[in-house]
Length: 158
Image 1 (tube, one colour):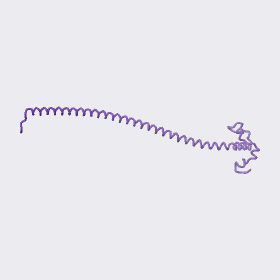
Image 2 (cartoon, rainbow, N blue to C red; image 1 turned 45 degrees about the vertical axis):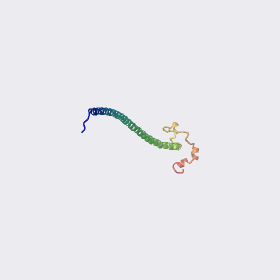
Image 3 (cartoon, helix red, strand yellow; image 1 turned 120 degrees about the vertical axis):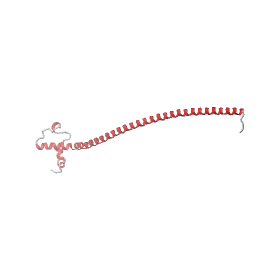
Image 4 (cartoon, rainbow, N blue to C red; image 1 turned 60 degrees about the vertical axis):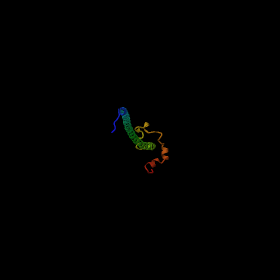
């Protein structure tokens, strides 16, 4: 082996010292960057957690509103069904009332004739003013004689 000179040893030591300083600087830089990355990672995790919490709250609120809307919709649909049943019932009753109204003149005439036939035509009909029913619907005797009402009421000819 060859013998190193003092100058070479000093240069080698200076070079090693420079390398140690450079390694220390690089380690310091790596430490700073690692700490910076750790802080950024924590910040990003916090931001993601906040966004996730906000999203979860909004989803919960939307689900709650959806459930309420579905309940309201169900109540309204039940109400509509109930009202449809009521409308159908009223239509049915309306048809009966229409038939009764169409038959009223004949019924009033029939009651009057029956009263006269029994000799009680002077007795009032319950619920009717003047005891004779609605005068607008009564026919005179000549109108009754001209009409086929008495013959067609019971399907007979008299």
